[in-house]
Length: 187
Image (cartoon, rainbow, N blue to C red):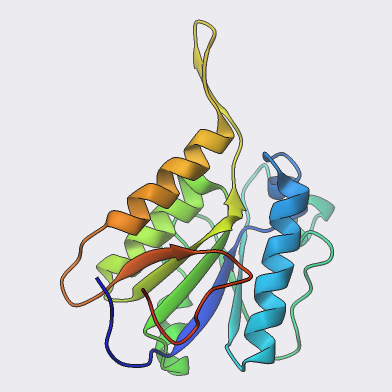
């Protein structure tokens, strides 16, 4: 499903933190792709919103809590702190996006099966159009026990397929690569 008018986009980067990304599959390439996405957004005047998770295991302001190099917010970019999987849950993200006039979220970060998935669904449920950056999100494998594991790459690919086929009324969802995303629409 596509949208017929130009959208007001924002890039939302979720949990691209040292203590999260450094444990994930393909983290160096994903970090580079996030940096590429952010640079393209800034060059085109698209706002970038940074979301950082804090918990007992990921202590606020600790070295692991910091954003992964070379990811550095520009002055004036929105910074959101969260404690739950969804970047919308008990945060100011929705208010910040509304203030910016955003109706299209371009989503990247970690971890695919937790915070990216829940943020994607929460965005769509709140009426936003969504583009998941297929080469700029990652996660760790899931150990099921008894020697069974779900590979991280499979988790990433599964969410890319799901988002490309989600159907919500009056909004669109799609995937795109960091180097090719169209900030003006969802195709």
